[in-house]
Length: 195
Image 1 (cartoon, rainbow, N blue to C red):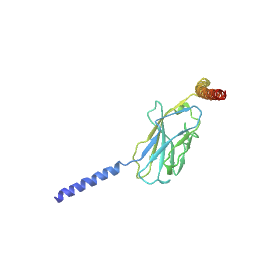
Image 2: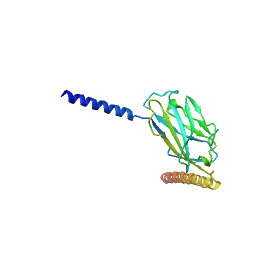
Image 3: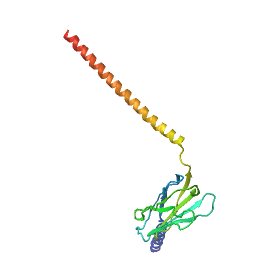
Image 4: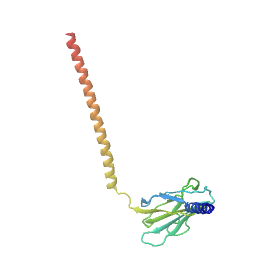
């Protein structure tokens, strides 16, 4: 009987050990982001850790894989302070915009170009919480919005507002007409009673 309890205790310890090892860093990003050529765009990356957060322990690494490429390149690192790229495509184009103490590992891309089309990955570590899957963002840069697209949007919004104002005006006119009609009927009734 004692042997059964010992085996059960060992199995329970092994299960707890496995569960503890499975706990990992959780990283959250948008799956798809679209940006207009030449604008600044914040790539949002948030995280949850099973361990207490500390500026000197949490490290954030961002990488980029261009469309059609098979390998990714490191483009940004943060641990206690920001380490932006010193050369290459993203030099002077990546700015830290996160706050690790609030679970935010975001960066901002400045003056985005069509060469930025690809996949951005955000990896966060907070030892001993180092396991986890990197958040990935499929990034697409598009042409500036043309006047005709803006015009269509303005017409749609303006038309909707116009229809609402028309319905509201009709409602107010009907209410006023009914009130005036009721007042006239009341006056006629009063005259009939006097006579």
